[in-house]
Image: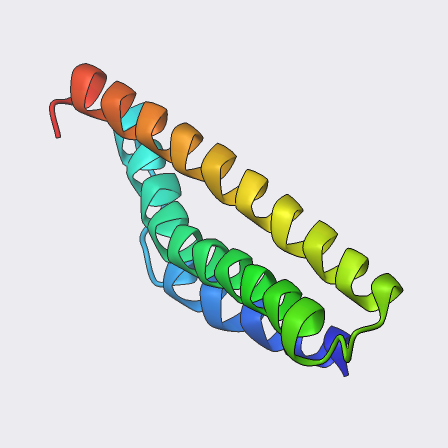
Length: 104
């Protein structure tokens, strides 16, 4: 089931990329890559947020006072928060570089 959802997501993301004409220079190629990244980044942030929410739900709602379930949920939520912070930092750095190099 996971593979079907992943394949459908890839097909939906790849569709706008094929609608763009072939790049003629580096700027147009980077524009295409930026367009694809602008589609993927919110999806990745949403998946990370859902992972954090799943960790919280698993630990405190479904944990049912089981120490193993609570610990597993805490680990999932903690790793999700770390990934969210790293992704936000990298996204900010890329945006700064994009504004500095390409002016927008």
